[in-house]
Image (tube, rainbow, N blue to C red):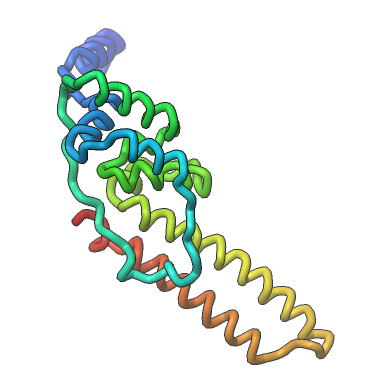
Length: 190
């Protein structure tokens, strides 16, 4: 292909119609309307505290991500508009573009703080709670692995407890299985 043909094909490709996508405002405003979010939700968004513990790392706690098609255009009342803008300003991170429910709005801040570089495909596929649990589990695996290394160093000096080492290794393996099952192909959409 010569240069002229190449340029023509590039221009033709650029001129193709792109599908219309809803904006962030449309996505959040649709959720505000669907779930009748108001002042109480804004208060819970301000007061939301991440309270994930080791006991929370169970697959029965993980919810599937429900499908959500935001409206293409949003017409809203003054109150809905105010709540929508407040949610966008308070949550204020790129993960907000992938929320499908009010609980995901609450979780997008903690998830972004744990890992600000998740792939868009994962954000669109998995519920934010599942992603957050996986991040917490990964951090625990890292922490427990460091403990194992310290125990092994002590063991070389003859001061380590073998049962503690096997308990830590079993916990690490359990967390790895949890993360693998959590992110298995069948666990995404509801």
